[in-house]
Image (cartoon, rainbow, N blue to C red; front, top):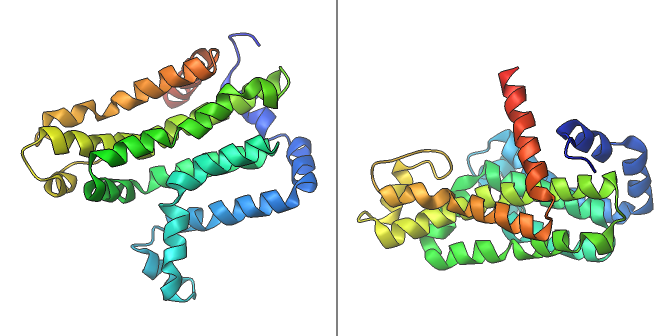
Length: 247
């Protein structure tokens, strides 16, 4: 695969109707399970509901089942990486990738969920979030056993790498920020959370919080180790995104 591999090729390969339709027909149960895991969290995120209970009421469902929705939103923290690992190891690569991508996106769209967990559990929660990336990194490292060389493998690795980066931004960045605040800031973590956007905001409340983005660099290095070609392709994808913004 040449270094000129671009985002359009990735999307074209992944969204090929014949390939996806064939996989869905061959693995209908796995795909139904994948949709059941991702669809509720996506619906909750897109509806911008104020709480799980309100969402259940608005959807005409028993509000005492809001814990199920909570699992399918915040629970993506462990559902996404573990499902990706289990499905990939059983040869169901596409459903596993679908859950990894969808679950990471759900977490990214609900950042305060992770921040609140971080406030409760402190710095060990940041270590826990980092550890949860190991299953997906292991799957990425095992690519040669799972897929033959070619565009399909490169596409799959690219999308899994992107999922890892999204997961890092969604879970590790905010939990690391709270951990840094816990160790280095004078104010209580709860007060800081009300002042700082855990993803992109800045605050004079604690300068240590500016280092919460360091795990992103660490993940890029980890992806580069698991998939040496990955760093170059991720750089190419970033250039494509930037060019798109300029246009």
